[in-house]
Length: 519
Image (cartoon, rainbow, N blue to C red; front, side, top):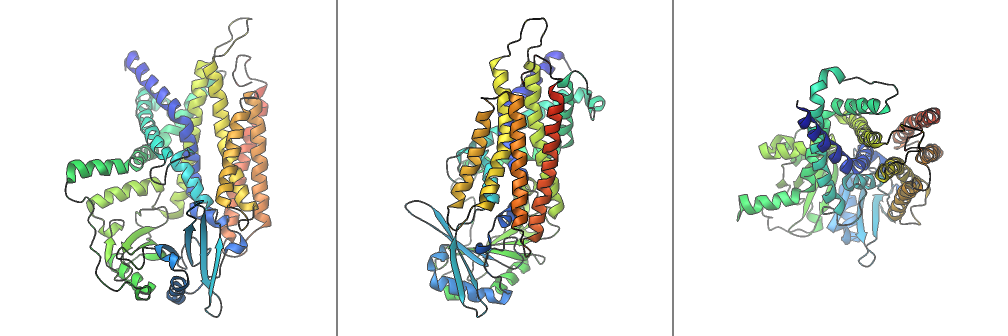
């Protein structure tokens, strides 16, 4: 490859990486944790937020009692069946205050005499909060599907894809010679380049999938709008079966077993876990059934889905089912499946967790390479003044990398330690995250970078120890036992890695050259 072409691709790779790296770091770390979104939501539950489980035969009676005494639940109601991941209550629904927009969750179950138990609570849904960080990079503002952060991350993902392609091109000439090489020595930049290459090449298919699917997810409404205008024109892009004119009283809802039988006609191996009812009592009534489908590529990280009429079991939308999705549906489902790791069960979730963390390291090492490449070298007895841009990037790299983890740890501590019944826990977990994140970033600008890194690492280790201690003190011997132990196990692994990093920094600090930007 001609040197001019190589340098052009190198510049493209460097600047697309630098412009997107820190936001991608946040998204990848949050995305790694999001692989266990449902277990994290379950981990955050407090004792008073759990209502008794019921048998399969009791669900129809419970649903009818809820709708009779709380008709507001008809607008949107979730039913967690016995094999659902979330088990805080058999039935739940939310009510939003029209003035403050505060959301209150209501839960329902039955006591031993089949009498209705109802309570209001504030669920933290910490796993969903981490998912929001993953989708938006922590950029606030906008609605659910048109959040500003999602639109920004679509552009960032496009830069990410360009960085992947340009990085692959500049690595190709030395592919076999440098594939798994890690050269240690006086030239620290060479080591970071080798490490960066290993991280990128070993997970190359994963990074391509994530980049492409993120662009599609971010701009799918725009893509659908363009297709409707230029391809489908006056014809509706999505066809829906017209609702039948029948009595849609709450009492006419089909039993849960009937919905189970209806979906098994389409997918015999489907095991319903969650029923999400909406607009009950109206012609637009529907139920989205989420369930487990072993051995299949499914739409979400946990469940495959089918949308039906809850009064007739007529199919409203079946494209999310693997067996009946058709060619177009399989392509669309493939985007979701590959992005969410919706195949292979728990093993793939752990693999995606590891790939997410390695991806975060990829972006972190990219920033370090940029900083080291632009560091002014000490060539005489004169002191060296580093460029302002290099010093800012060094501080931002440390602040964002550790601040994001500290913010997440603070949010987890908030949802585990604060009383949910007395506080708007969703608000306070956001306060905890952004306080931890912003204060950490700010701290790196008032302290030498290496000292800030060591102190922030120490703080992060203390927070993780506090999380492990708090989890063990509130260890759930029932349904959450395995989740609590798994949380402590993963936290211990992260703690070991962070402590090792902290000791390494202490050891290496005395060998830093006098012209480095870190100390």
